[in-house]
Image 1 (cartoon, rainbow, N blue to C red):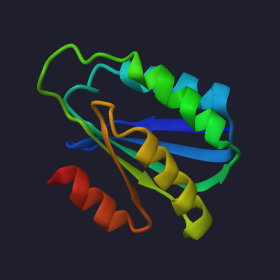
Image 2 (cartoon, helix red, strand yellow; image 1 turned 180 degrees about the vertical axis):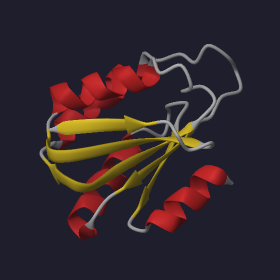
Image 3 (cartoon, rainbow, N blue to C red; image 1 turned 120 degrees about the vertical axis):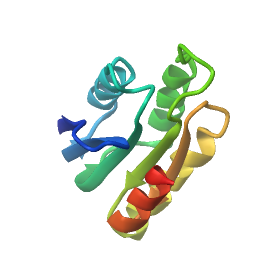
Length: 123
């Protein structure tokens, strides 16, 4: 799994992931994002269109558990995250993660269309 961060957009940080998504590396990328100097001010767009899902439901539960430990430094922060995924299988898997993450301070949504994901983040 490879990840590239791009914070050049005014409204969001783009994270592009390629290859097989595996839990330890994904948690590492999430930790980097949570510590990014612009994280509180910018939403996140997870571009997973060239990635392969290698996560189980148990992996999702563990990832949500790790994210539950995150406490934003301020009450008001950029709290939207768009998961841009290809196809129905990846959408279904991502939707399971979204359901499990409902109690987190971050609002995840799944998209198959770049423009719709960007509209969500910039609205």
